Length: 437
Picture 1 (cartoon, rainbow, N blue to C red):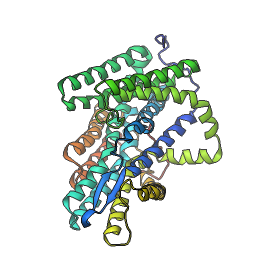
Picture 2 (cartoon, helix red, strand yellow):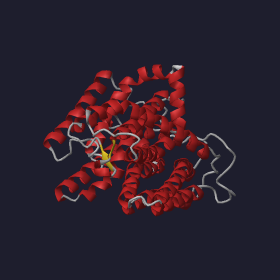
Picture 3 (cartoon, rainbow, N blue to C red):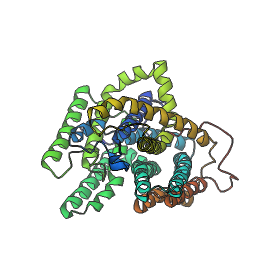
Picture 4 (cartoon, rainbow, N blue to C red):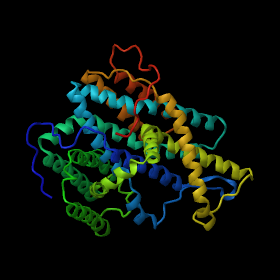
């Protein structure tokens, strides 16, 4: 694939300034799949009268399946698509990069503050009630697992103004440098055997995938022939498979996410090509009224759903364990025929519970955001507090105390990201978007 560097003017206008409903649809569908996948991972048993919580998908057969259900690249592709569009519109209105960053951080961390506060209260109540410390620690750990996304996505969105400018000046070199960074990080990690080096890929890999979303927003991907996009998708997957089979990379795509590796970027590129091929069909489907209503409902609560879904699943797992211990129900052995037969009912209960909690939590999120700060220092400090909260959570573990600290940091993000002269960051009820992008 050969694409020449973009000529001036700096801001390309390859797509009309209208909302691409296919992006909304694929993001909502991916979010639903993530929730259902995490629900399937919940394994609860009560061997010897003591509750045990396991990842039910830690099996050999899940490795090949993970290539089809690894959806995280699509979130960053969509974030890149919508992020660069939002930045260009903001820039055309005279908004500064600091104001763009401030607005983005408010949207991401306002719902996070509520979630962290509730989790802190819940973990504290469990401890006070005499719940074994290992079970409380397991609950905190499981709740925290998907929250890496909050910090990394916030960082990626904060860098949109800088990376968009780089993309507009030299789109090929921008992707090339990020790709080289990913290769360098992976090489250093595998050569030294120090897995911690791989966590530098939390920035490099996901920024690379987001950068591909910029290309999609410019129409560069759709401009390729269907044959070229098909060949690119097949080629990228083939390279990833070869690296997994004969190289040092794990075969499980979720293992390649922690820490992120080149294979995630390759999968993201393939998903982008396939999404581009399916875009006309997706647009037709989302035009149907029922589908549009569902997509819009999920999209308006996307970040709320993502932040809360694991807390809901852990609560359901705890209720199941308590019911089994009391004799009110019998839990089947993991992976037994009975366990698989009960999965549809479990997934339905999980999805309904997440939807109810998201609807309730969204009522607390629906506030008019304060005007974003125009001060670069305040925007940078807000971003540092947000990313720092997630780092603290993973370094220290999500205890009730850490969750409370994260709630305070999230509130600090919202406060610092607003203009100093605003008397309050909480205003009259409104309907701001809390989407993932």
